[in-house]
Length: 117
Length: 107
Image 1 (cartoon, each protein chain N blue to C red):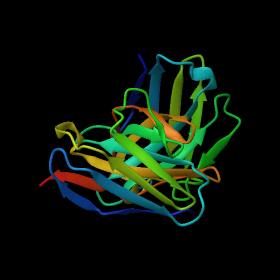
Image 2: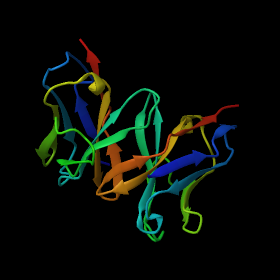
Image 3: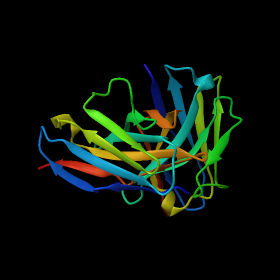
Image 4: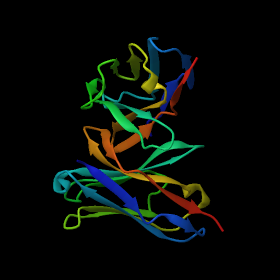
């Protein structure tokens, strides 16, 4: 069955960096568009980025453009999110998900990132 | 950016009720509309994509319709498992945006 497992979250100070990973199994990772989404109680669900199956198409939401970088490793069937210049407002639960006809059909369990001094 | 406005933000209903949640986009999204259900502590679960296509395994009591900028999710007969928060989401111009959510609670 399809599985997505995020890792790499935790506490980081403002201005710091963190790299999230999403290990996948149970589907053809090589052709699957993938996405990162985050959620907070105050701002709700916010799309961060998506990447095409071969990595040649990448888009970001305005709030993370220039600070976050999405990437993927087909050999490891893994998705990544490099987060730099982190701010308090980046504090959220981060999810990876598969993108299918404009909808996010499989999600990981989520991982908490806290940006605080 | 396309904004998505859901209403109501909270809905109180009883088992067996027919309930409808609406979602309005700030511009035409050409049918690229999805609906999700989320329960506390869990990731959102895709119910419907492309306005009206039911995701595998989702019960047929979930019905969605709409076009242009106006969309609606109807639960034809509310079941105990359906008390949750529901979100709409659009996909256009290489970006995704979610609505603010509708919490369906027990009356």
